[in-house]
Amino acid sequence: VDGTIEYVNPAFTDHTGYDVDEALGETPAILNSGEMPDEYFDALWSTLQDGEVWEEEIVDRRHDGELYHAHQTIAPVADDDGEVSRFVAIQTDITDRKAAMGRLKQYRAIVERLDDPVLLQNRDGEFELLNEAVSEFAGVDREELYGTDEFAFMDPETAAKVDERRKSVLETEEMTAYEISPTFPESGRDATFSTQRYPYYD
Image (cartoon, rainbow, N blue to C red; front, side, top):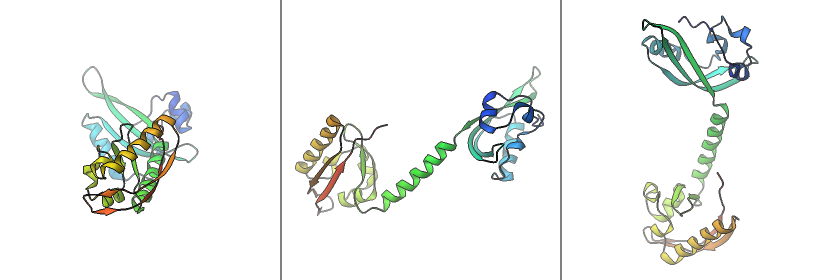
């Protein structure tokens, strides 16, 4: 209950670089990165002392000095008398996921700055993601376009051509390039687009 480490599993060694004998008898402070504010640890201990489970992300430091991000769950364990006798802490390394999220945020910022429409559709043609340029051409709020397709904002003839191209990509699983000249009834705009449509794999 004072935070002294009594047990670590092999994954602890793999993730942190600390051998068992280096961790036992120490406290989790050996992982302290200096990146987390004191208020974080105050809230952590307050939660645990109230007998509740703590679940948050943390930035810790491996034995070699490398920082890592973890999702951390700490649960109090009660003895036969109902008193908290120890704590079990589980960490999931999310360093790669955090890095990927950072890159995704950058990509999103770039896409949003483009004047050209960029969109992602599911296999049925429904919009799952689109940038503000799509909304501006369409004359329809972006939130209203999610779950719809080209027929929601484009003249029917051109929308049908786009739908054919989408089906072609599904069938061939190859990128297709084409030009279209739709009109947008809601915005009153028309334009000619040089379009590239790609299959996206999960």
